[in-house]
Length: 327
Image 1 (tube, rainbow, N blue to C red):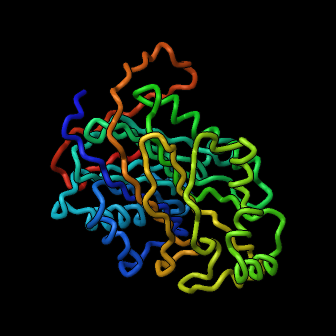
Image 2 (cartoon, one colour):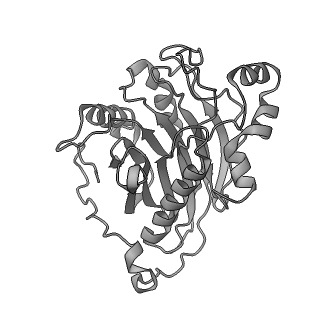
C-alpha cells in the first residue's frame, strides 16, 4: 500500500476505572481537550457496570456511550464511534482520519476465566494504512496477586495475537486498571515516601516495573515515567487517599504501556480533578509514525484452531450515530 503523502497520526489514549459510577460532565472536560487536539481518541474503561448477568445493555454503558459520542462528535470531524465491551471492561474508539475496524477481541479473566469482572477487550485498527491494536484491561486485584496479574496479562496478550487479522498485530497500546501495587510497603511508609521522593518510591517498589524488569510480564512493552500521584485508592469526590477502615495503600494501578515500534510517546499524565471514582483517569498521547510496507496476511491455517475464537461480524453502517459494536 502506498504511503506517499502520509502524515503522522496523533493519538490520545485514556484509561479510567469508573468505579461502577457514571462520571458527571464536569469530570469529562479533559476528554473535550483531548478531542480538540488528537486525530484518534481511544477511551478504555473498567468497572463501567456492576458485574451481573444482563439481557440488555446497562444504563451506565448507555450513558458512557452517549457521553463519549457527544465529545467525539461529527462536528469535530470524528467518524464512527466503535465500542467493544465485556461486562464492565470497555473500549471506545473514534477517528478523524481515514480508519477502519479490522477486527476485535474480548476475553474474560475472572473466576474460572469465565466471569467478566476481570479481562480484556481490544480492537485492530487500520489508520490510513498504519496498523494499530489497542487493549483495555482489568487485571486481578489485591497486592499479593502479582502472579495472577501476570497470568491475566499473558491470557489477554495471547488472545490479541491469536485474533489479529494481520498475524503480527503491529503497534500495540495496552491500557487499563492493571492493578499492580507497591511491593511490601505500609500505608504510612508510602505517604512519607510520596512527600519526599515519588520517583524513588516508584523505581524501587512498583510491582509492574519489577515484573517487566524480570521479564515475567509485558515483555516488549515500554511506558513513560508516571510523574503523577498514585491513581488509587481515593475517597470519592476528594483528593484524599482511602480513609475507610481498610486504608488501602496508594498505588499506580492505572497505566498505559505500548510497543515502541511505530509509536512515539508525547505526554503521560493523570487527571486529579476527575474525582467521582476511587481511581483517577490516566492519559497518554502518541504519534503513530509512517507505516512500514504491509506484510502478507497470515493464513488462518497457520494459527492453532483451538486458540482462535470466531470473530463477530463487523459493522458496515457509515452514518448511524447509535452504531456500536458490543460483544
